[in-house]
Image (tube, rainbow, N blue to C red; front, side, top):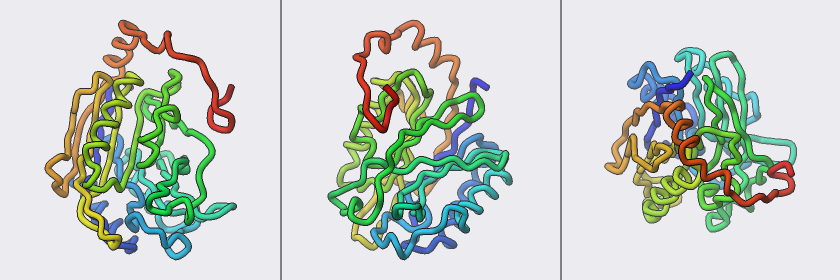
Length: 262
């Protein structure tokens, strides 16, 4: 499948109230029927809370069940991150549910130390690429955006997904780096950020973006509205450009132990 329809949910989040957030996010998805992939913000059930032990759910808890139900109901993939209890502690886990009942996940590797995330959550160790409808999506969470080596395309993915609670005070950084990741990797980039305010006193401007492989904005939530941004990507056009302008052939070889294989 070359074309894929996206729905990026740019919404406020109710502080640490999963049921209320799931209800409003479902209503948002209802307003954008027919998408192939719905993207929800980081920690979409709670907001960016450091009350890790209080808010964390088991891997097969109510939120993962809700995601799978939403995916089956809409016959579409649905993804977003949640605080999940894992073997070594709580992780900020980006869940990717598909209508066949599969649930894949990526644990946020770069924890936001300026917000003390590293003191409350366990860092992930692996980069994760999931396949859906002929597309390969590399999953990333918020602060990961600042680390281009981790997101480097080794021709093993077709699009990057970033889910975030990225504050309005650094909105230009968010917007610039999303476009930079698209240009340097020659792939589409999907960035989903929340709006509103949280109990940490932080304001969020949204600025959710869908950027194509040329850095062109296909959808832009700069107005900060509570909305669902929609866009369509065409993999064949992206692949044609990569063949015409194969900059990746001149990339420097390197490896990161525990993240990339040799």
